[in-house]
Image (cartoon, rainbow, N blue to C red):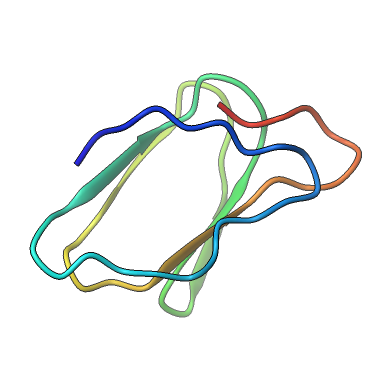
Length: 69
């Protein structure tokens, strides 16, 4: 699944997973932190990450920074 989303600064997507599809994030703006399972990474514009089906993931947009798109 590829979709467009905006994550306001100081907010996070709730931890979730997709049973039957992979999810791909491509960061256009902002510097979010993504956590997949027990591993976290800081992302920047131009970065992309593929989340395997069944993997629990969370994305956070740090407070005080720009919104993530």
